[in-house]
Every structure is written in structure tokens, then in C-alpha cells.
Length: 93
Image (tube, one colour):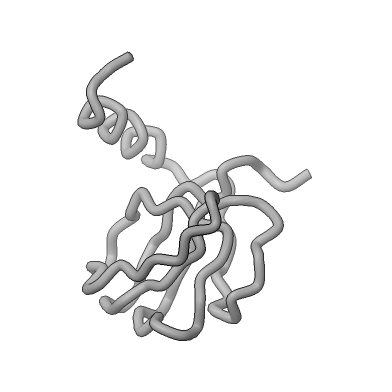
């Protein structure tokens, strides 16, 4: 298995094309499946529930970039970033 840096590069390489985008609703509702990346349109903080159930806030998330943030919900409380789009880990059937 490669280093964590190798895995990060591979993850970012796989996001060159967005095949399973979903508009993010910051209501805190579970997406029904995990996202593997998050695009931020306007810089700000992003509060999420991670796939393992941990709630965490990413502070000052840059706009105009895909971020390798895995989550199953984005929380209204603590999220100031806007224009959020997620990349689903698996396509919707």
C-alpha cells in the first residue's frame, strides 16, 4: 500500500471528471450515501458528519476547488461556505 500522499494524489486524480455530482443541502439530512469530495463555490467553513459519524468543521475551505472531504451530511450549524456540490462515492441507481 502506498503512502498517504500517494493515496491523496490518486484520489485527486480520480476527480478530474465529476461523474456523480449532487447539489448539497445544508439541512444536515443524511445524503443516503457518502460523498467522496466536496466542491465549494464561496470560501467559508464547512461542518460535516463523516461516514464514521464524527461531526467536524473544516475552517476556511477555499472556493473553486474540489476537496477530498468524505461525508454523509453537511450541517447548517457551522457551515458558512456556499455553492456546495458533492461527488457521490457511488453512482445513484
